[in-house]
Length: 389
Ligand SMILES: Cc1ncc(COP(=O)(O)O)c(C=O)c1O
View 1 (tube, helix red, strand yellow):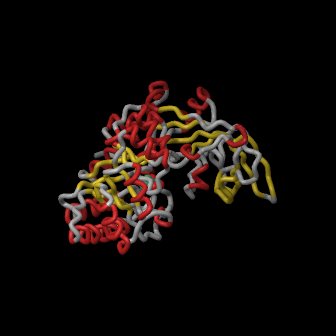
View 2 (tube, rainbow, N blue to C red; view 1 turned 135 degrees about the vertical axis):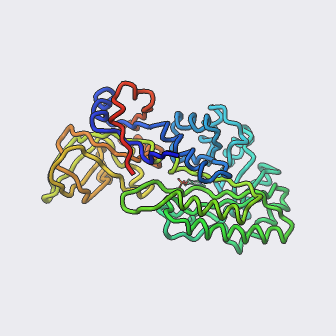
View 3 (spheres, protein in one colour; view 1 turned 180 degrees about the vertical axis):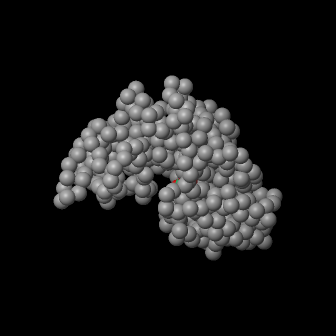
């Protein structure tokens, strides 16, 4: 399958869109979302995909994922209600937050969400009380220091802790169905997945020896998007994971919860320079979107965004700050750029994951509007669309 890994607007199209719709502006390609979904389905054919909507819950993205037949990883009342309002059946959701709120359980009952994860004994008691008979997956802890964001610092039971928890869940009358894991976000090698699958194999075996027949393995998210500094071959990584799944889990139902991979490469931010100054000999550029907005991913996701100016000229190091009156609102220091002027437009590709999802309205700045490329593209030259690897 031909793959365009990154949706990226060209200079003229960016300028025309900004003239028509203003700046800052987010542009999402739903076709890129679809391509990303299909790529994962092609390379992990046995996997049932639960899109981790926390990465980007924009309604049009959710609608496209629904059309494609995706299921969803949810973590809160808000996410469950939003999907419900879009007509998603509770069977298509997994409540993948190992620590659940009372309101979350109520929402699950209302929406018919009966699949959930846990990683400790207290949660088993909570689930048994609030949702007797729920289908549960034990979230395991994975060692993976190479992950960009290591979720295992917060969640997961070790292999040693697994058996008592599995037994407790079974005794509490829950449908003790499987194991869930997350190797950590933006994992760029196969090894962490393979070693997590080794641990999962061990837990499945221990469970069987104790008369618990596990039938589901949820391999989580973590699938990486291209980034400038590290090269990796995703096809190869997925091939290795798939081969191992066939070898060790031939009759197990396999789930995955991709977030970043589905939406990360599908969104471009158009932002403009609203202020310029020099401090201690260093240029400072103030943009109309900042750390409290789309660039919240710099803080919450520790992500380093590529900023493209289509201008030519000598490169120098500069500071990029956001529009609010807070001194924390600085996104990048020492970022290489050409000299910029007030009014210059900049393009930020691959900013669809953990960006607008965590943006705030701090200081009265509205969240940046998102529009759909396929709604407007007929108006602009298709030649301007390029794909970069
Ligand atoms: C339980 C769970 N599943 C899936 C994801 C999505 O991970 P990623 O965006 O790395 O694919 C997350 C991210 O926080 C998560 O916590």
